[in-house]
Image (cartoon, rainbow, N blue to C red; front, side):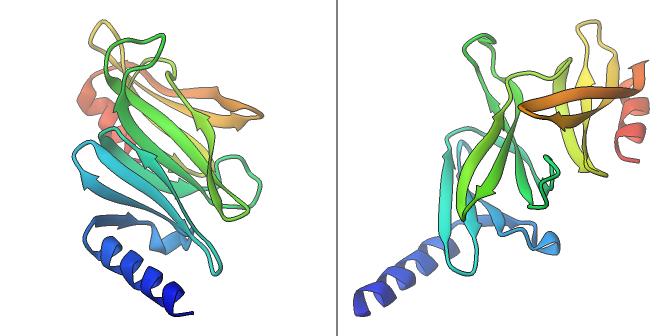
Length: 170
């Protein structure tokens, strides 16, 4: 029992020494702890478990919501990284789920439609702000489809960044 108490005290000290970003309003259990500019840990706390997933990339966005419609809250993390097929560092979207108290990847996306600038979770869908190779912007919505995200609709196409930001934030 003493060893468990010391272990919990050490974890508490470690957690207070990092910057934490949580989504308490949704009571998801997920939080993001940023260790430095290029290292974060996605943590999941339930009444009886604690688990984490190390993200050795810069993080630009964190939010939670029920992406796949199974009734449990998932974590969406925007990271900046290269992939096997896209060799430049760009913004990517990772989705994690609570699998029996453990953080598990649901989808580690390498690309949506265009060049991902930002995303948010709204009404059960992921809304994206994407740029195109010709300098225009697109606002699109994606929904979960069995294994990954499926394009649902464009909210705007071929607009300026200012126009896209207004629609993205609605």
